[in-house]
Structure formats: structure tokens, C-alpha cells
Length: 186
Image (cartoon, rainbow, N blue to C red; front, side, top):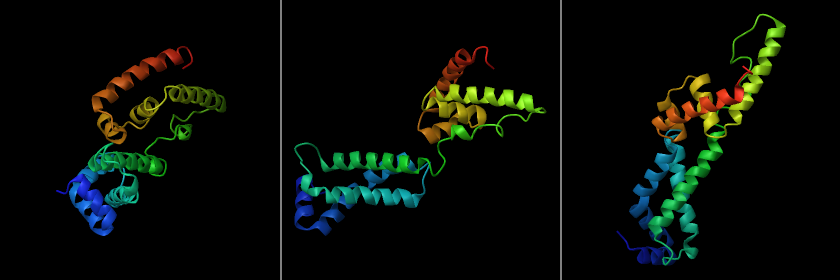
């Protein structure tokens, strides 16, 4: 393993060898961080591209690296975490990780026989959706996934990165909050 000062010198004096040495030393670390953040939501190709972006970013940032402030390993870890989060957020909407609350409506709830029942129930459904939205994130997403889409706590925990028992506790607390909010309305 090359020391940070030698690696930084190599990055400046012989960029190709420096990049190769940095990747050789820290590929496992960067890949593990990115994989842990994105494996449940993105393909292995997307993960590999994110890993490459991390190394490219640090390579391009080489003139600003100050070893007095921290190690190259720490810098790579921080950049890997940030790039993973950015990629997750970017793809969150397109890969439908987040349940669009506005899409829940008449098709999600029971069909009604008469027009007046339908209008009345649509108003209640809108009030229910607004109440769920008022819980904020991630609580509203947990409630939608658990009670409308019947996803297990384990599946929800994988998507949201929250422990399954925490999902259970949050859903229980959220249901109590919803009961108070909806008292007498539904």
C-alpha cells in the first residue's frame, strides 16, 4: 500500500500511475460504500459507474487535497457516500422508489355503486392522503408501502435503509397519529 504523501506525489507527477495506485489501494473501500448505498435500487453497472465517478472526482480534485486536513482514504469515503446519495436521489423518481401519493385515489380504494357515495368517498380519500402526507418523510412513505401496497417491513427496510423493527415502530406511531388527525372524519 502506498502512503498518502507518495500517492499524492504520484498523482501530480505521473497522473496515470497515481490514478492506478489510488484505485488499487482503495477500490474495495469505495465499491463497498457505493454498493451498500445503492445495491437494492440500482444495477451493478450503475454502481460501477458511480465508483468510477468517485475516483475521477478525486483525481480531478488532486490539486486541492490537503493531507493536513485528512487522508485520501477519508476523502474517497466521503466522496463515495456523497456520490451514492446524489445518484440515489437522481434515480429515486425514475425508478419509482418513492410512492407517488397523488397516484393513490379511486383505483386504490373500493369501487362504489352510486355517484354520491363515490364523491363522498373521494373526499375522504383526499383527506386521508393529505393526513398521510402531513406525517412527513419517511413516515408517509412507510404508511403507504405498508398499508396500501401491503409491503412487508423487511422489504420497506431494504428500500429505505431503515431497520425492519424501526419500520414497525414508526408505522405503529404513525397510525396513532393518523387516528388523532382523522378522528371523526373517516
